[in-house]
Image 1 (cartoon, rainbow, N blue to C red):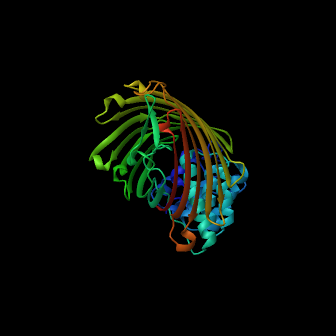
Image 2: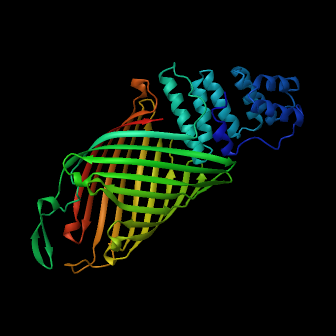
Image 3: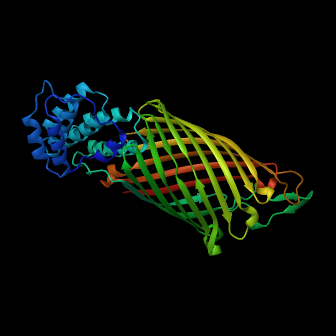
Length: 450
């Protein structure tokens, strides 16, 4: 059985190198690695132990001994070798990951979790962190149900499917007033233009994949598909496909750069064809200031086309600096700023955007709960003046959202099953009454992760 952490530990770049090999010779090491690569760990273990001297063994030799012993199902021996290596190189994340799996296989669950948390504190690359989080979830599940064992080697892909219901207080973003002024004269809005309440069923599914052609470089891809079906307001039934793919570069121990290229297409089902298409490139710079503080610089350059409405076609650029701070093991604070500009063929759609958001998430591990709350502010200033008005549109949108999710694995023994509830309240203020509205949405969903 291959190491649970082999794929992503290598991308972490924490393998032990450069230490003198005083016990086993380089030839021994190379031969042992070759035996491990062809799934012959017992032979590799015998070869290394024959030349092993505990007083002079290097970290690399101890590491290979530990791997060979682990793959030979000699977990107690593997633990001894890994711990001996860590005495010499306590900061070797790769060794700690292997030790965590070895401890898990011996049902030393709390000790295994401690090693995983230690590596998380070293601020590994995002994909490594995601895989460690997944293994921590396995450990937590095993703490609840000791009969659960390890899932085996990590996949280089992840998938999910979500289904649920949403109550929407204002499906069409209708204005808060029934009467608006056009050219200074009052007009009463039709029923279809006023606030409309409805219930919608939704289905979302997605898959992500990571390919690592070499250490420090990976290629990440994702695709999501979603459907929304309203009970009465069928004109707002939508289907959306989103695809993104691109390279990620790990620079040193604290910096990552990713450059995904994305494509999105949206369809209003009643129209029978696509409504809008969006092509973008979205570079991201991620830098770890310290173990619990990360800074992100996100940019995006996009082109969006609307079918049958060339005057609305636009190009956009956005810049979103943000930070993520983890004050405790279970708490996480996010803060960010939004700056953007959209240029459309018709100037009434051209606008500048500025805003900010702040959020907090807390994990209640023993209860299997995760809760979050966030607030955002967005100021949008349009450039052109619409017909029948005397000034350009200017909107200020304020939103508060709350989410709670519960790991159903505790009750159902089904891994990756999650129940989520969410509430979102939005107020959009505008100098043009027809664009001022309130909207609240309450959702309940069930997600299965694969």
